[in-house]
Image 1 (cartoon, rainbow, N blue to C red):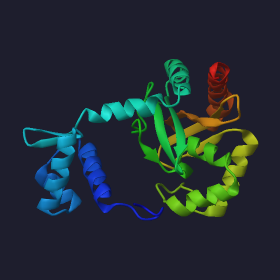
Image 2: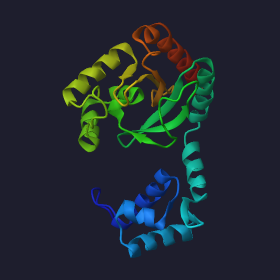
Image 3: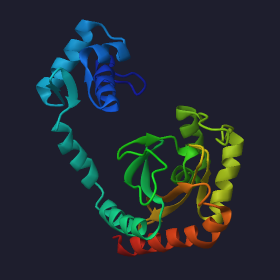
Length: 250
């Protein structure tokens, strides 16, 4: 059993194998052994167990993730019916503007991507289910701004403020000052803080009971997402879509 800080090493290893296979889009035994630096017997044990349970399949010497994961993904996807409303309206927005649209929510102090549509560009490499640090994304900063300072400190203590670009906010006090600005204007901006050449604008989606469902963001190239574009068009488009979403939420 765990005591809140300890975990099962075998469980962590099995998930490390799963993640390695996913990130490589399939890998041979030798490739996994080299990447994970596990002994042959340890890697064989985990692969055999995962294969027996249907989470991994072996095709022509290459290990791939099994379809068993689909049932878990479907269960997670359907746990919040409101996500379907968000996806529908986000697709409509993506059809109207030449930018990427993403929707993400917070889970255990990180941002998890629930929906992503590349629209007319492909500036990000977001994947559904991908976890991101909150301090480098527009939606993440928006959601952090909704939390009490004690919770923000807990998230920083756990995940840190790693640097991704020269614009990344890596100082705790500077981030808190940024979050205060987010609260004042009602939306957040990612100004090349996660990836050079990418700017994003994000705002929260709130259910009728006051629960913050997540953040909807518009992501695009810096030469298109100028301050003028953001202030005169993007923010309005974003808020209009969020209003449509919130009008349909129970």
